[in-house]
Image (cartoon, rainbow over all chains, first blue to last red; front, side):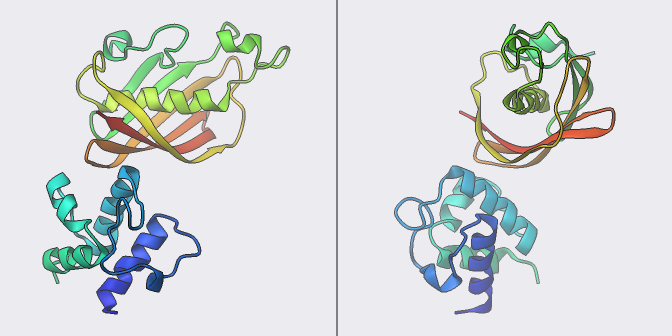
Length: 85
Length: 135
């Protein structure tokens, strides 16, 4: 698992208080919302705030969110693309 | 001075903000609620021992949070979506001048996160995080 992907998973677990869950239990390609992790719109706001705080990346609107929140893999790609080194 | 009733659609017995002291739309609001023996809920909460229900402290914060919106909430569809980490540290009683402080902590897709504190004479009575949803 890439370092960034691991940090993304850790952020999700911490921010959404998914107690008892470990990063390796979250599949890279599983959808975050609906059938996958089963997150809802309140979780989405928490993730938006967490991503901004931890990675300094802003998710400006719903369109960007829709793209970024497809899966852990797409979220990791989104952060890698937008993070300024 | 802010016209409370022009901004909030709430009415007796559920209008729980008496005065807005500071207001920076989208950022921060400080408001007041003055508690008296005349509050209707003291009739049963509790007989001989009046105590503001904790859920009403949360409602006070939500209503104060309504002043973060620039425009009047009459006709607007804004609802409470979540309450997180609510702590009730001391009771609110008749005679208390409650200070309601609400700060915006972020927003996404119509959801807004608010951090709220109810205090009286520099004593924190209640802290909570509220999420409100605009439909």
